[in-house]
Image 1 (cartoon, chains in turn red, yellow):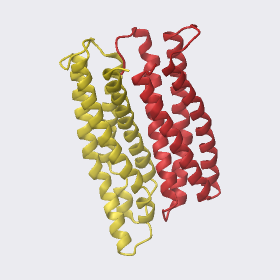
Image 2 (image 1 turned 30 degrees about the vertical axis):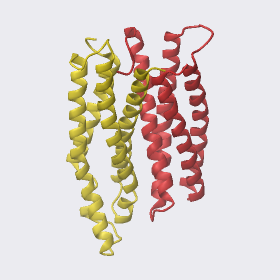
Image 3 (image 1 turned 180 degrees about the vertical axis):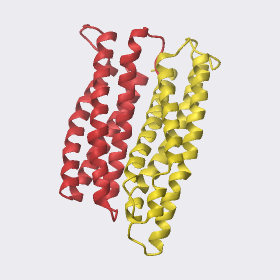
Image 4 (image 1 turned 180 degrees about the horizontal axis):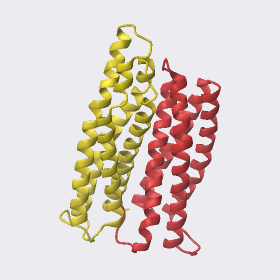
Length: 147
Length: 159
């Protein structure tokens, strides 16, 4: 029940968009938990490695898939019409902010894992957690479609 | 915003939680494969805990809000083929996922036991418990079932 009746040609781009977004939520959640738990763990270095890999090999590709699906879906649903509905604007705004924040979190996480710096790991975890919260707002907006 | 759009938003958020939790478990499962000491295994306990809470929220939310939508929306009914298929796949995913949990809990229990006994070195039994074939198979089945629910929700065959 992800959306009401729509043309069949919209299904695959929508699937890419939704699946990418859901994987993004999962991989970023894993990264956040690992980064924040690493500060209190005896084996914090291992957790920071896991967080970095989750961001790099999970979240980053998932973000790309989500954005490709979003652009494809947008071109089908709205074409070249000038103005987007509010909920599309919310989605794009959060996705753009989230992409930059994810990249910064990924870089911080990489330094934290490589140079064994728990403070950088915590910063990456907090930034990714804020980004995750924003993405959940975007998912709400995609469903509720506020005007 | 209508009540139905709120239901759809909550259904979507629950689905994100469910797929997200399955993904968190995959991260933990893959990370555990390289663990062999009690401290290495216990480091991943927060992933297990968070995944466990999120999967319950996601599972219950998807079925409750999904059925609610099928009842309130005129276009769909709970007895539509694609809705029944989703419920069956959801049940398979939930049950196989629930059964995979104890398989990994054994590794955490053993690690805790070894830690309490003062053991800090690599342990062959613990290493084997971190790679349960049955647990992996059950989680893979759960993941496939949830993936197929998503495909079913998008394409809505027969709708």
